[in-house]
Amino acid sequence: MSVVEAPVVPVRRPSTRLLRSELWLIFGRRRNWAGLAILAVVPTIIAIAVKVSPPGGGGEGPNFFASITSNGLFVALAALTVELPLFLPLAVAAISADAIAGEANLGTLRYLLTVPVERVRMLAVKYTAIVIFALTATLLVAAVGALLGLALFGGGPVTTLSGTQLSFADGVLRLLGVCVYIACGLAALGAIGLFVSTLTEQPIGATVAILIVNVLSFVLDSIPQLSWLHPYLLTHYWMNYGDLLRDPVSWSGTGQGALVAGAYALVFWTAAWARFAGRDVTS
Image 1: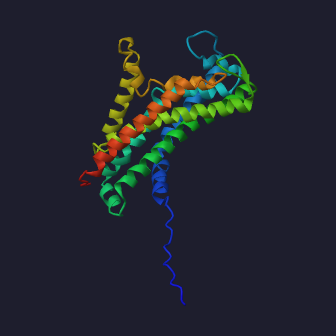
Image 2 (image 1 turned 30 degrees about the vertical axis):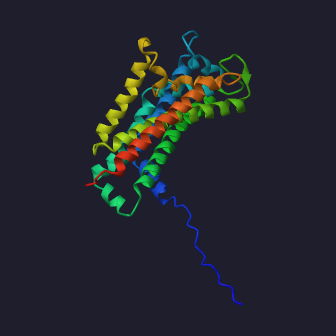
Image 3 (image 1 turned 90 degrees about the vertical axis):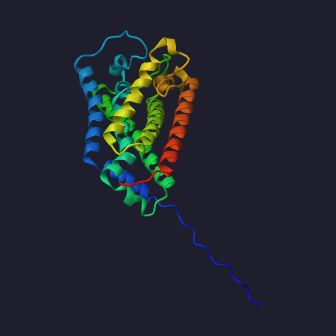
């Protein structure tokens, strides 16, 4: 008695070709390399300036500048603090604004969709590339700051904001945690940028709009009379990465910040999909 063999259905492996192409588009452009170089300049300036003229104590909040001379890892933290309000958001805004609007402006969006590529998949790939860029930019600032800081000031135990000391390895892990947390906030901004990018064919205009959203969030967060609104602002929890430098780690602020960032990312990626799924692409 013969046995009828069931047809073997080949398993289709998920392809990363589109993601690799998108990452090459981002990291292969000279203008983006120039932007990353500018991000790397800031920790360089900080390290050299502190070496030439060591800062004194005092000031409000975590004074990473005053701790640089005791441990070079604090150059990375100081650079992230300086770049977080403007430079890092500007870099993410430029990349996310170019995601859809740049393709439309160059006239390549229509041809990209005739590959064929599902619009949902294309948006998912483009947002994944934005998230990777946000993490890369953050790690670049931290890496340049840490390497220069260690070369100029040395390493050793890391003094936490609670006054206790951690081993150098634990300090590096805390720094990586700070980078991931900051990248989460920037990724949420990237989701807003992706949505704005579906509304226009001018990437420069989209970049400006994203920066206005970012600056407006900081401005509203600085007005005491709007304290009821602060927990819902995208940037309200961005500076809470200092909680990762306490002993023990305070997860309340960072956890809330991660939830807010995730909510923004979900809402605005969904809005981008709703806008782009039914959009008549003519260019």
